[in-house]
Image (cartoon, rainbow, N blue to C red):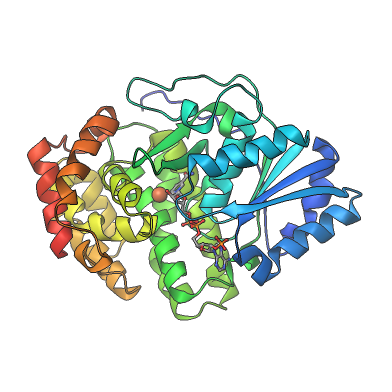
Length: 387
Ligand code: NAP
Ligand code: FE
């Protein structure tokens, strides 16, 4: 076995009802909190009230609410929330919501503690404009089971003026604590459950099959794939099934750790320009469209891993069966779509291709097969029509 490293400095508190512990945990970090969340869901589901109640019980009465996070969050949202954190001198930040709210909470921690703005910290191929050296403590409380943002060092941020979606990736961007309460995900409807669950699944698939090396990450990914295959269709059919919700929250977290160590690959790389140019496309929807085409292209590159993936999914142990395994899962959760069906214009495909090459060129090296510009364009063309 080759040598490897594993560093993941996030305390995990997992379990039904664990959201009630936020007050007790938050006291370690001070007395003034900024809650970063979306516009509606945490209020409607009662998750926000649960957090506020727990903070109050713990004697944390100074709580500021930033509820301006939108799906595919922007640098402007991070900057606005950071200004509030600085002005109000908050001690710590609570991210409550889907991956968008958690990503913003983590980015606010960095932007509010260092000079500059959110876009100074995203990773271009040549690096970020600024390097952070301070942060504020962040507690992440996910209400979706998908991104794994609660346990990793990534914040995915969009810049609507530049039409770019890039990642802040830094060890100061880890949350201090992840409170994962699967009951908070019960309010997701079938479609949101499928979209977010497929994001977790693609994290596991891409980290498992790419060329980076980390055996712990592979073990996390394998377990995640097994769980999602079994439990995502159940969660989609029966959103109130609490066992399915527990298994999905758990597997999304495992996959979130796997990508922290091994990163993602071409499916994610090619999705980012899509939701950067069309912010109404949900990240998981874009992935579901691209995944079969990219897997068909990739599986000759790391055929052993793809054969193993097919076997784990219950198919013959052959790389060529990987696409069937993936398509069957997507069908079971009603996510067989095309870029066209989502309203993407055909003339955007060229720009998407340029963006991939310009913004993610270096990451292409860990993809199972390094694609040429023509390969990338052809994959977009196929995804446009639907696999
Ligand atoms: P999201 O964008 O956070 O949320 C999508 C929608 O779901 C929002 O309208 C939200 O409503 C709603 N919602 C959230 N929780 C809900 C619940 N329990 N019940 C009902 N509705 C709920 O979705 P996401 O898929 O979790 O996050 C996607 C974002 O994360 C993308 O920007 C993606 O690029 C990024 N991402 C990050 C990582 C990472 O490693 N950090 C990995 C993959 C993806 P409200 O807005 O009203 O709250
Ligand atoms: Fe993702």
